Amino acid sequence: MKSILIAAAAALTLGCCTAPAFANPPPPMARGPGCGPRAGIAAALARNHAETPVSRGVSARGALVEVFASTRGTWTLVVTVPGGPSCLIAAGQDWQHLPRPAGTDPRERPI
Image (cartoon, rainbow, N blue to C red; front, side, top):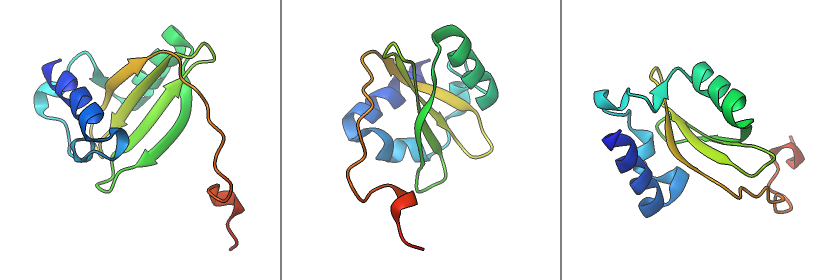
């Protein structure tokens, strides 16, 4: 649990999803209550909070960073390291879906 709090503090301090702390695998003690297989984490977020993935990206070192959110505005930040567990990093309320700035949708790029 302590390592999850440290990772959350790093996220807030170093700039959310681009922080180097997210790119490294969690220490062995991070495999506690806030970590587990991605499918189990996603199912629990859907079942308990009606949250589904609304955005995701991959860090420079291959960690999958996802935001799960509900229509009620609750959200959870989940990081999955390659070959490792998914961990809950942060959660909150009042998630807002913002429109993409023009020209940033990869589907709009010419081939």
